[in-house]
Length: 74
Image (cartoon, rainbow, N blue to C red; front, side, top):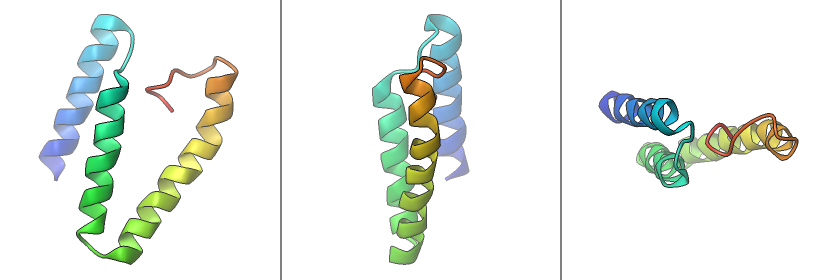
């Protein structure tokens, strides 16, 4: 799973440096892969993964709406 994380981070960095944006397809697919990996460990782990993603969204969304963060950052 560490290789997938490195690959996604490298892809996001490449797009960010080259185009100053991170494609939604990359971030959404990374979230999906991460949640599938957590689901393979059982429902409690999937629940904590969803909770963590929700908390991050709760804090990042207002900054996105105010123009302080891009959608890839959220």
